[in-house]
Image 1 (tube, rainbow, N blue to C red):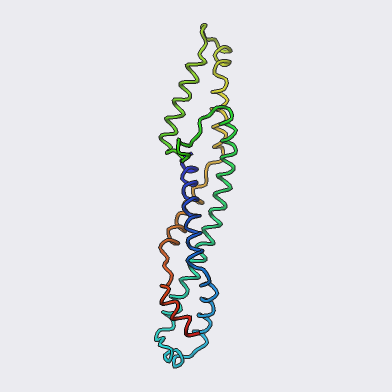
Image 2: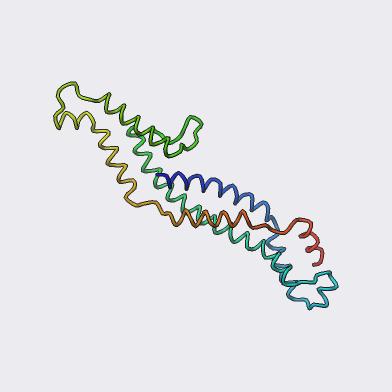
Length: 198
């Protein structure tokens, strides 16, 4: 269950970073392609007249915009894949909650830490067991009837995890997220100066 909780957190912060990146890139994608084509079409003398001494270095700086867009798109795809896994899990988990399993959300509607949720589950099972304990000598059927819901929940919980969470999706998404946050596109003033040479 911990990996699902971590995926939910990662998807949430990744989507915020994606939105931030979209705003940061703005119209720079089209401009980047135009700038690269322009720089590749000029000879060294023409570039020196425009105060560009290092064509390759300038193109590499401009390509950071394209790199950041690619990372953003890859992260978006990874988030969609993880969200499908999360939705599938939450659907199964919702059925268990309708049977009485406690919610994994705290009083502020935030996802609990796994340790806290495990403690909550222990309290739930202890309460269920003590409130439904038979008054007579427990025999197999009496005990089963008393604890039927607990048996059902335990059985279904095991089936929720028949297909283990995909750690590769999570780690790949985390790696792309980190690369995206580390990739810096050129400063706005530098970018404006470059657009002026077109």
